[in-house]
Amino acid sequence: MRTDLASCKDRSKELVRSKLVLARSKLELVRSKLELVRSKLELVRSKLELFRSKLVLERSTS
Image (cartoon, rainbow, N blue to C red):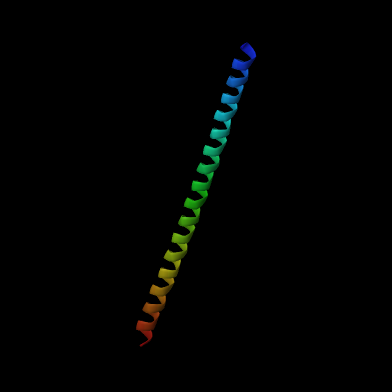
């Protein structure tokens, strides 16, 4: 009986560890996705700034 209980506790601890690893992996994935979104936003801002500059240049030459 004692070994069954110990075995059950060991499996329970391993399950908790596995869930923790999974949670950490999911958190890292979310962080990576957030960084990707930030990079895309920066790209859009840069393109908008370029467009505005071209528009100002076009107006000043016409």
